[in-house]
Image (cartoon, rainbow, N blue to C red; front, side, top):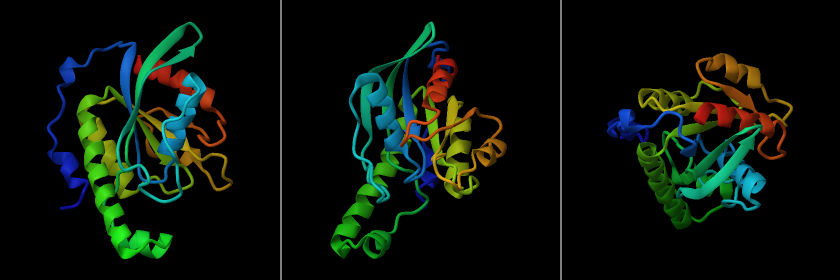
Length: 213
């Protein structure tokens, strides 16, 4: 069964139990592999706590277990928001060990182990949806936004009625097109940033405070 099919089989969290106007929220950072989730998580954590959450890599599925940092306080003017940030493994429709072997030079046994761990990571990320109050959905704005992964993730988040903020990442690259992302998903706020360089990150913080409080 495709990995994302399991997303549809998870029972919806009790929406009515979510408290509107919370000032302390759990925010999951979601998206496909290599969209820049961990880079963004590290940027947020470093800017507001002086620490980072984990290592980022060009190898897909480097984050294979969810990582969290509690009590990150973001301030914007007279408003503030306290976050527990959850950096989740990348969501994928399928994970093939051959990708690790052929594209990244791993031995077959290592590739199989990484693929197994990555699959477990996807399942863990899906389960975390029952425990978060909102989502930062990281998308690579140098890529076509209408991928199966992006559309399926967003559809399921909307079904759960979770507040979603789309981070159009990698605007430091020449081929980036954040306007394409904005046009593709007009029902959600879209903030273009470079998590790597920090460009426009203050705009993301102000939007987070408004959107998740």
